[in-house]
Image (cartoon, rainbow, N blue to C red; front, top):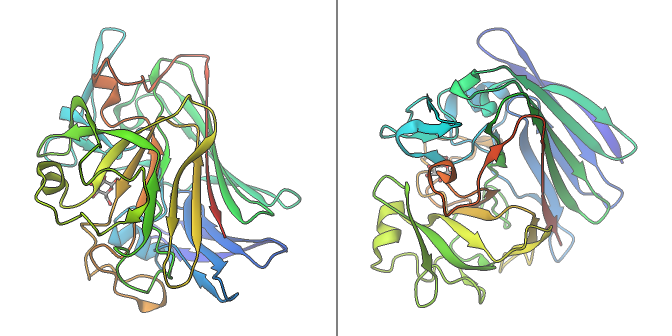
Length: 347
Ligand code: BGC
């Protein structure tokens, strides 16, 4: 039980990264790094007490900097896409990096996934808090944004992620975590057999560039209906326009929520029997089935990852919410506090 800090390698510019290991009294451990405030590993027991690492990740910080995919990373200031990489706040238009088809994905070329965060360790509460002072106009967003991401390993085998932030000008605050889960073990191949439940009656329909059209498409009678649990892969190859546009599931589910912290999704691994429950107070969750993972992404233990070998459940505001009046607004007002929580609990 406790917290240990070790080295996690050096970036090409000489900056060193830390690896922080948290262990609870049940034998579960997680690792996080200050590079990107990233969740590097989650080692949990299966139904027979056998431990495995259930998130995709890389062996050291240079691979995180080089190989992409946002494995386990903290995404901010605005997770997901912004159409045209442009938005207006208080009548003023802002243009941010166009890093995907003329749009912004995960806040452009230098997101929070690529910075080294300040680290604070709280041994008693098994918590690591990463903080970042994001200056006015960093990534093109208005306002000095002071943000923290805290990872707690709880005694009931959950990874609790808490985001807090404050700004001095109205800005966008939409943080998320980009972990790819494979509950059979990070090196065990496809996640298509995982059984998934998501508490959402609709998804935000997207165009060919994965930008929301504004329409909330009911999941009823579509491959997006996970209200009754089913294998992730059961309907993934169906002839469906939305699936074609995402190359599989890469869609935001409009959660049935009142904004309180509640269970919104569950994943079960059929062989190991591991279960992951997801709780959040966010209004949306992006289900991304790793459609674009490539074999050149060599992860921990030298494992060459592949398409659909991990799935993400990224809790957040809806994509491009700043540009849609019918979506809950991701704008954080000056002087107000941003606070969201997401819990991934394992059994
Ligand atoms: C997006 C995917 C994207 C991936 C990057 C996800 O959040 O929805 O479209 O390819 O991030 O790894």
